[in-house]
Length: 264
Image 1 (cartoon, one colour):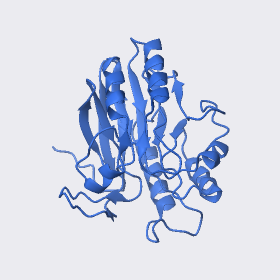
Image 2 (tube, helix red, strand yellow):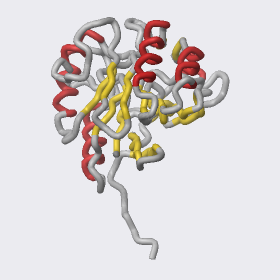
Image 3 (tube, helix red, strand yellow):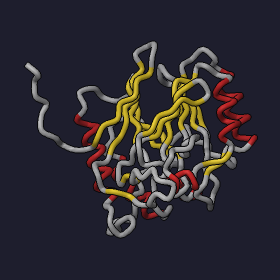
């Protein structure tokens, strides 16, 4: 089984640029074209939040046009930049999404690895949170299939990244999440967005990872007063491959590069 993860798309209405500089829709098209060139077709694409930069309906219309180029199922969750009402209306045809309730959480059991999505967004706030209600839902959901390898997807990263300005807008409820994950050893990975960088760490006996953005990347400045800034270095996405025993994660840069060249 092969899953792709794209994150932090930040698509804006047609004719606009994110931050007045980034053509996020064009960069997303490049990422999708790269995905379509892969030798193996992916089974599904996971989109871990911040789909629309400003949450405008026109941005979601633009986004849906671009995502229509994908030739596989797409599973989406919102991020802090998304407007929840507009998000729900934009993806009303996605049957796996809940049509009501406070949180956008779901389970997909169609693949060799079970996919569980948990909502870390607090509307109107950049910083995320997993409250007692959401953690109870996750604990109960994971307990339903204790022997099925599982991937948990969410927007906010449940760990300190060392990037000061990113960590200030991280999330609350990390200890509770780590306790829940530690109770369910079938969780192979927690895959997240928000950080615009690929970072991995141990978490609750599993591995938590973040995905690069298909658009701009957060500058790596690990000083205590590190600059709050982004760069236009190559965008990226991730592949998660299940071989029947182990989940492997690969980070790819988006683009067309010279090669491949044989070693012999």
